Length: 224
Image (tube, rainbow, N blue to C red; front, side):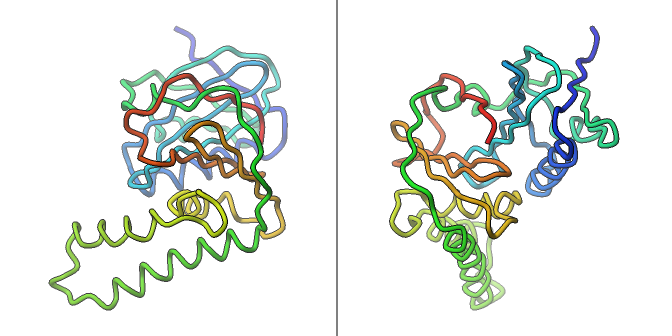
């Protein structure tokens, strides 16, 4: 079987994909991503370890391709060709359960545009509070359960003025989606889903619970 080669329409997309995959792999070396291509757009879906959110990267393709597969994030990174703005898709892997349970394709409505500075400040605050409270723990108290519980306490809070959990803001920061202080940040919703969307990618959270048991469907891959 010929390994499909996807060529990006815009300069810098290959480097953006490589950076996204690299950040994802720092959290989970065995991470998988789901790839969907259609209507001239590639969508890369991931679930960053421990965040309980979905991260989405989209890019326009030079040529139309039809693709829906789950692959190793590490193998995909190895096949990114930045000089030629392309990527070769590796062989499919048995995907994790989240890969078959994406949010609905349509019905998204814009709920507002968030001040980029406020979102970045919230992300920095999450990191700073976690570090400060961790530093106050005695060495014997810094167990994995204690740290996970502390992170969950902080991440489940809502971004001021919205229903978006701070875990989504933290994930957007960790994945480099908030790197431009002036770039617009939009908030979209459909049903129980909220989507934080920037020029560099989106993070989607399910309000009222985690991703387990989420409705299937398939998320649209309209470019951000």
